[in-house]
Length: 116
Image (cartoon, rainbow, N blue to C red; front, side, top):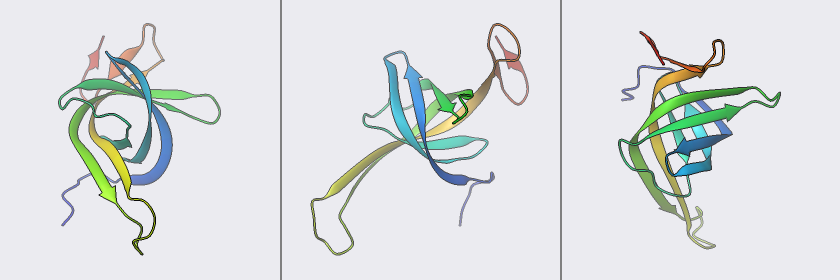
């Protein structure tokens, strides 16, 4: 039984992850109003916070503040067993707030209040 309360969209797209250690790129696999799963090359600390930026084809950007809730490391082979084993790593993120550019400076907007 699926415990998720929010509708999830399975869509593959590039995102940029910014933390205190710097910026890296990830591949988002699905997203909902409350969270996102991102494939990453390196693990991120549980409970860590980072900014996730989505870039549209038209140059628009949307960012959100997220918390790392879990990490996944998968090792798998092709269905017929041929070829080299593959590996994938990812993080489950809880979206804390969305960033808007409507006012200056940038604001982080969550469901109940505005944080400066």
